[in-house]
Image (cartoon, rainbow, N blue to C red; front, side, top):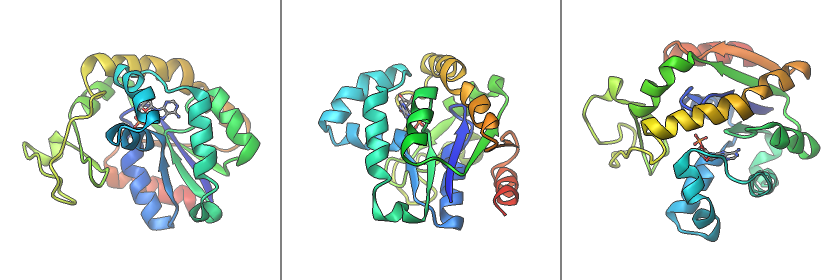
Length: 206
Ligand code: AMP
């Protein structure tokens, strides 16, 4: 199964992707995670994209497309993939159709007015990659899953969130139409609890 998770920043793509990847044994490919890993390791790619990511803008299309194209050649993608954060614009969606078109696109629909709070309350684990909201974990700075110290992502601040939402509306939201026309899009209500959102996804996936 070749699956894409679509949704605004902070819509819960990463959280749902971890659940889906686990249940359906699909490789979870998050371009955001790959970029962050490169920044952490200070690779040439990391150095190239650091400022762009910190500002809330998109990394260059050519670099991003090549990165995904390469990743999809890995053995673990023979059974399919779960893409999280890619494609993010029409250029990337058309490029993906050229080399490995998706079977299904799940769109997490969320109230954009609630996104700011969802993102600024987010705490991320640099080790296992999971993220949590302060509303659920309180003041602890320890990852409930692996015990690592949680961090606030550099791009999870009010100003950058505004920019990310702007870029989402301009560039990513048109993908809803793109995949609807291909008959591949299914929307689920992303404003429900994590478990309820996942239940809807499982129903869709059967
Ligand atoms: P995410 O973890 O998906 O929220 O992505 C964090 C940041 O990584 C984005 O704001 C972009 O700067 C960059 N990024 C992730 N995926 C892409 C993509 N497909 N195209 C361009 N930039 C991306």
